[in-house]
Image (cartoon, rainbow, N blue to C red):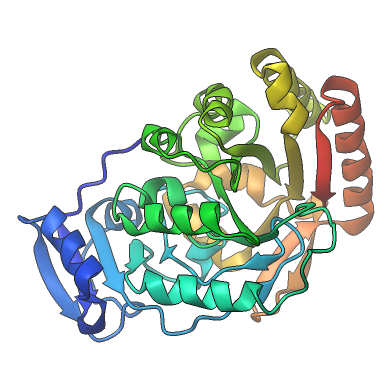
Length: 350
């Protein structure tokens, strides 16, 4: 886990409730600056990575929208935070901001009240689906990494307690970090943590400033023992050739990754572990930004001969693998899973 010690905290006046004041008190010697809006930052004179290392923002989330997902979860809960310490080259959250430090939303009580009201409006017992057979499942970390946020505010533990004790809801989040502090909380299988995995040498290039793949895999047994439901998230799947032009390089690397999982996980952990698989979608704006901050990553991410363009629902120009080629890639991936980790159910793949 990185030791996040901001040099400046930016805050909006409406974020300074009891929780916001407690966060400020946790960093008593840090410079502070009031903002009018948490998502409109002043010019800070810092590069991309230094902003993520040195800046913390406190804000109030105005919109408590709960959106249907149907994939990682039934629904996406209102954000607890936005932004991350990591600088992953493909991160979709960074696409929507020129500067994207960690922003903590301090009105967590409103977040939980919204979820509670929402879940009680849904059918019960819940219809069985691939997200969960029993509970309505809410993704609590779509725009941040909860493993990092957990150390910055006691509000995340309050959120964990809410879902653990709720009779109808459970929480889920994906992470690229291993935070030992989470092992001190007993979620009673009501919180699903999804460790994001890809071949190690690729992760070192594109998963900037995150914990290693080896460390994430090694933590899976520990988190299961602590009471979490543990899944894995093969995302994004990046297709690439080897230095010698070997077009099977990516699939050979995933075969080795699956063998690492198989060798590490105990039988009872394998029995409950499922996965989700998402092939890479990249973005023109992000491509241009990466050419300045991480050009080696773009050699893997921006491969026009394999990709086709797509205008996103937000109007951005994204690229994804050619749909006919991707159909074959999916078949290859599914076959690798059947051959190497047949015990791992694919919850969804696209």
